[in-house]
Image (cartoon, rainbow, N blue to C red; front, top):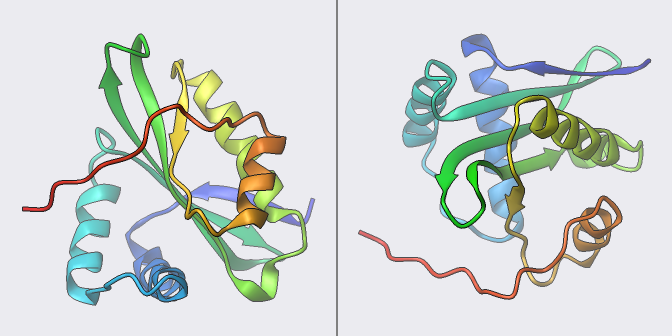
Length: 148
């Protein structure tokens, strides 16, 4: 096995932050390094929020997964939100996205989450096909946001 998915720790934050910066640049999302680092510290130190995992390929950090959890009456209890999944460009094409989704699916079952939700950029057909292959379906509702 040339890949592992391991729980991230505080020492991984510089790598995680750089990957997140690269990920956000793809769709021109705003990125604030200080806020990101502070949020990683808060998130990694509080399992109540969810988990952050690093994807290791041949000894190098190749990507990351952020899973957040929340409660939904509609979906019957605790649900998992696949907040972020990123594979560095130089590691793409090595089935790491597939391995990551298998990991997420297994993690959700082992931890009794009722469903896994995710959001996807409408233009990202490659990711959409991958998610559909693993059983994700379009939900009949649209996501809305209120910024404070």
